[in-house]
Image 1 (cartoon, rainbow, N blue to C red):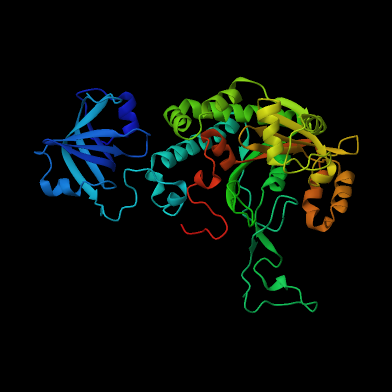
Image 2: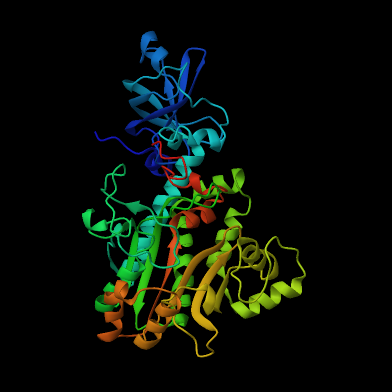
Length: 462
């Protein structure tokens, strides 16, 4: 007989069925002649109660059934008299896989701070909150692939190692095999990269966008979903050195189509998580942030407001709200501005578009006004910007002008410019930081708690 997941038993099990379950003990209590174990296998937020008759387990075995121990139990499902659970398992056979020293096991039945749990990232997934986070993360990742695959997008794998800095995307991690104690130098005393592995400077990628544009010029609609890296020495609740990005790129697409896809994408992913993880979202709504469910429903049930950057600046100026950072046309909006727009002024998700040309990257398409580019950001409550995208500049001469104005060397982008020489088309795309999406869905306040093994300054332990 094969073992069953606890989630399957909780949802579909029936009294008098025989079942085998495997998992880790969350709690054990002894009452009169019986022992009661709460068992969890990670498939569900709820535990399955195991009732142990003293004839089933020897006193020596019972002593080893401590919090954290891993076991297999075979038994019969019965109606549970306990409040809040439909079924429990009456044990007939118990096998102990791995015991636990109860004196040193760090996860006891008490509330642990998220800061403490980050110091034991190898065990924190066994807690209610983190296990719920990672089930939501899994559900969202699956929904992302399903969304794009159903629409005929090709999933492409862009390089982790690159010589491109995807200008404006962030600080770069250098990758080298040079002996740092004996770095070869040129006659001008700069680093001689001819002696390095690739013969030129190499980095961990900050974005797969430029390569996605290459593939969109052959397959029309593509997307990336993989790790990206930012060497920003920032110890905040919003930044990671390693995170996952989703970047669709669409040929024969303009800014309007880009905004439409971004809205449909967010609606679809949030709805999928609502469908597949209802117990986990209820938990977050009760324990973490009481607006989790209402925010999710607001995403799913209404269209997003669309404003130009200029209209947003005007609204912020008229609000007379006191901000830490100035509000002025030509300056980038900060998180406080974005959140005030979506939480206070508009009251729902907002898509801002047509940003000043001076604050956006060279590859964004110049608008006819000469002042703005066809860029857009999607703003949501609690997070601010969650998606950033644009229509790309498909006109060779204007792209060359933007490169020059940005102080970039055309030769470094020869292959990117070739896309405009050989069969250029209007195209657009956007990027979404996956961890910010998981933060938004779960209400978790620190981005380090929505990725299994967070990478941040001075933090690479696990």
